[in-house]
Each structure stands twice: as structure tokens, then as C-alpha cells.
Length: 127
Image (cartoon, rainbow, N blue to C red; front, side, top):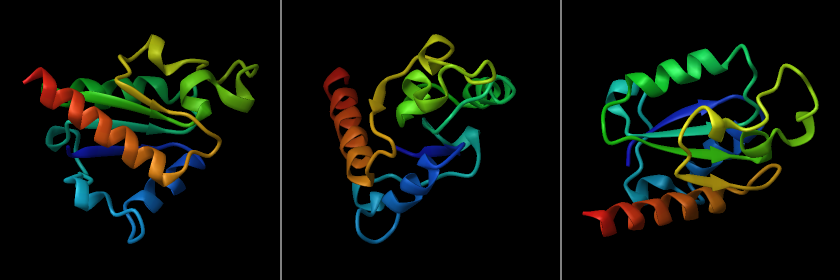
């Protein structure tokens, strides 16, 4: 999997931590890519606002097939602490097809690595 990181708030720090030495996503074959044309996994880490949603949809549309999405953190999954705010998207799953979610506020880097591993296993079973 080659993820495109979309770090929107504090969960992005945990996503970066997952790529660091202790968890090291490189061992799982995950190399973060700077371009959506080179990525097949979109990791949405954090709060998605209504102003950010169109850019997020553009990134998803620019990714080549097959493409997968992981929602990381309570804010991306259900709005989290800011669910009552009118500027926060309460559920990214309404706008994008979510393949895996990593709950928590903030979620642990190990949970992200576990979600990526389970997604890789699910993809391998389809093939």
C-alpha cells in the first residue's frame, strides 16, 4: 500500500509517528507518497471541515484504481468533539467510501498499523 497522507488536525501527528522508528510502516510495505497519482490509500487523519471536503474529494478523484480509504480518529469517523459545529463534516463516510476506520482520540500509531495490515489481508483475499 502506498498511502497519501491527508493530515488535517492532531491525528496527523499520530500518523507521522506511525511512520517513525517505533512502529515503522515501511516494514508493512507502506511508503507515504506525495502525489495522489502515485497513491492507492488515502488516510484521512482528523477533523474534516466543510471547506476542506471539496479538496479531499478532488484528491480522492485523482487517485488511480484500485483505491482505498482509512478514516483515522473520532473526528473523521463521526465528528468527534466538534460534531455539533456547523463547519465540521459529521461523517466522512457519507462523502467517501471508507474501507477501514481507526477509532480513538487520538488513535494510537499501532492501531493505524493494525488497520493497514487488516486492509492488506482483505485485499489479498479478494485477489
